[in-house]
Image (cartoon, rainbow, N blue to C red):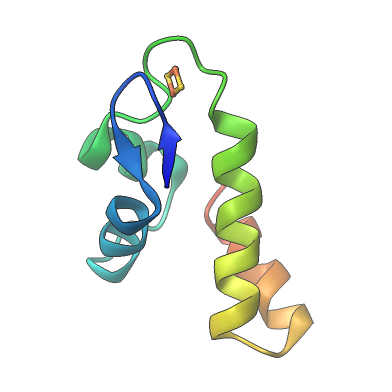
Length: 72
Ligand code: FES
């Protein structure tokens, strides 16, 4: 599913960028271009990253810390 329609960025693109070491929203923007046009997708992307980090890190405190470290 596309999370950023303007730039054609899907969930897969974001997961790949995170797996390749993106550790801040600006890295995701640089790697994928998401959020650089209308910006409507930014809130959805933040929510998606929170969900992904909770799935991969069942310790909720750690997931929140990870999300915060992404400067979301
Ligand atoms: S939907 Fe992402 S910049 Fe417009």
